[in-house]
Image (tube, rainbow, N blue to C red):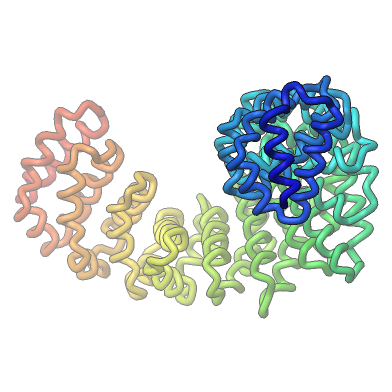
Length: 558
C-alpha cells in the first residue's frame, strides 16, 4: 500500500500540471490497489481528498479520462463512497462525457454513473432531468455491436425505467425500436432476460406499449412461446413465462390491445386463443388473461361470445375444478366476468351454462377466486330476472354468500357478496328469493350494507330492502328489527352528507316499513316527521317531492 499512498500524494500535488505519463502511472496504481482491496483503497482515496480533483480530469480531450471514470466506478461500488462522489461534483462532468465518441470512456462513464446513483431514486431523477435518457438511447443505436456498452445501456435503462418520470422521456425516443432490434439478434438466454427486464417496466406505459407493438415485439414473443412451449429446460420455461406475461402486459393498453385484436381477425388474437386449450398452465393463464384484456369494450366482447370463446373458457375451468391451478381459475373467471358486461351477452352466456360452470367453484377457499366468482354471477344476472330467481333460490349459494358477507379479512369478497345478495333480490323481485335470503340470515348484511362508505352499495342495499319490505315484510320483520334498520334510516336522513338518492330511497323504504305494526311504532318513536319535514325544502326536487309524500303517509298512519 506504500505505492498507493505515494500515488495519492503525487496526484494531489501534481494532477493539474503533471505529464500524461506520470498521471497515468498514478491512476494505474490506484486501479491496481482497488482491484486488490476495493473498500480499504476507497477509504484512503476519500481521506486523501483527490476525489475533488477528478472532476477537472473528466474531459473528452484527456487521455486519462477512461481511467479516472473507471476509478470512480470502482470506488462507487461501496455505498459509503456514493455521497462523497456527488459532493465532489462528479455527476455533471460524467453526464457530459456520455456525448463523447470513445467507447472505453463511454463504458467507464456509464459504470461510474450507474454505481454512484445505484438504489437512489433522487440521484436517478437528477440524471433524468439532465437528459441522460435520449443520450443513452442514441448510444445503444450507435454502439449496438459493442456488447459491453450495450449491456451498460441496458442496466441503466433497467434502473431508470423503474421511475415513473422516466417513462415520458423514454416515450419520446425510439427506445422501442432499438430494444426490439436488439432482441431479435439475441441467442443467449441471459441477454434476452436482460432486455426483458427493461421491457417489462417500460411496457407499463401505454404510449410505449403501442410503440413496442408497432416495432414488432409481439411477433418476437409469439416466436419464443412457440419455441419453448414443449421444452422442460429451466431457461426455456422461464422464457416462456416472461414472454407470455409481457404479451398480456402489452394488451393492457387500449390502443395496443385494439391494434392486436383487429376486429377479432388478427393473427395475434387467434394465436392467443390457441393458448387456452394448451397443456401448459402458464399458457392457459396467459391466454385467459389476454381474453380478459381483449374483453375491455363491448364490441370485442360481443364478437368473442358470438365466436365461441365462452365454451373454450368453460372447458378450461372444467380442467381446474378439482385441486386446480388458482391463478388459471382466477384468470378464466376474470375473462367470463368481462364478457358478461354487454347486455346482449348475458342471456347467451346463461344459456351456454356459464352460471353452472362458475358455481362449481363455490367451495373454493381462495379469496381471489371467490371475488371473481361473485363478480361474474353479479354481471350475469343483471336485468336477467329468471336467472336471478334461479340463483336466489339456490340455498347453498345463498348460505355461502351469507358466510362470505362476514369475511372481514377480505373486504373485496365481503363487498361483492353483499352486492350479489342485493342483486338477487333487485333483479328477481321474487318472494321465494327473499324467503331464502331471510332463512339463511342475509337480512342483517343488507342492513349493514346500507351504511357502506360507497354510495352505490348503500343504494343497492336500500332498493333491495324496499323490495323485501314491499313483498315479504311479515317474513323479514323480526330480522329488520334486530338489525336496527329504523335507527339506521333515521341516521341516513339526518346526515347532511347523505347523497340525494340515499335520502330518496330511505324515505321509500320507511313508507314500506310502516306496513308492519312493530316497525311502525319504532318509526313513530323516533320523530321521523321532524327530519322529513326539513327535506321538503331539499334542493333536489325528487327528494323534496318524496319528503312531502312520506310526511303525508306518516301523518295518516299516526
